[in-house]
Image 1: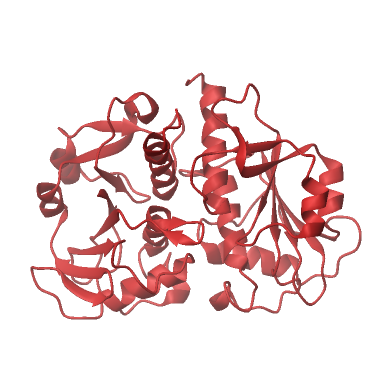
Image 2: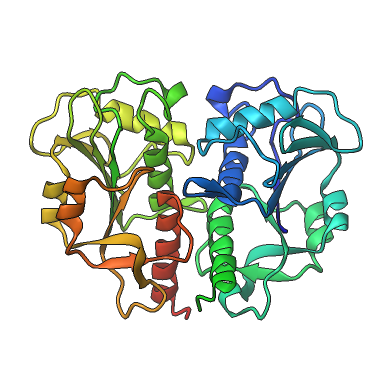
Length: 192
Length: 192
């Protein structure tokens, strides 16, 4: 299983946002929607071996964590609005400490980044990390931030995690996911 | 200058579509919006050395070609709706055979794929092509298709062009652009 986690620092934690304003009132939810796209979409297919966590830290009810499981996922189309709609539905149901399914393959719970990091051995994708092309092995679980840097509290949490880089330029989180999955695809297919 | 051209086989050629329905009534315009995002966005910056052509072949007035020039581009945000809004504005002004600017850095003209291909030495991104990681040189101009394969007429036009591949799996056009730009970034920065 390949796992990604993305922190949405301002991402709304209620389903009351408009799908017409994902960048604004939804707290840059568009960034997270593009990460979902990058994590799952192949041409005319879905990556069934991927799970994607979205850690939402915005108002009014933070923190919440969403989980998209590729093996079970349905009703996801590539456009941002489609992922946004599934997120909105997940944030519209009552949730507790354990994951509850909102639509097939989409789950929601109360919980923060520390809890996600405690569940799997995450690495951080960071421009200063080891080049993924030269890493002897690739991490199974990767953490990224949205358009904002990690907070001091998050930095303290992730400071000791291994760090990997996909290239020389600072990129959007969804582009980083695409690049890492390509490196994984190449290794699995015997492309050097 | 790095150039990309993407064919939108069903993409609407009038500005009368709804930004709330880019995949549907706009003819999978969402695919083209994501290609614009991938072609231009760095983290907190735009790639000024990129130009992106969108060849729109859908009703009611095909073919039209849009051109996004990174050096001049303004008012573009990363979300699909932002690119969709600039496309809608470009398709809402009268246009003739030569490019006319609709908003800063966005141009529109009547014209088809053959004309774009005649203006620059394009290569095709195709799963069966040369692996970009092993190509001695990368193409300056790259052609991609949207969610549909090239038509027989397009295939005849592009049949003799050089072909490059970014990896072993069939991917969405925007993911392919991200991967090719990463290879270019690496070469320009001396990353192997």
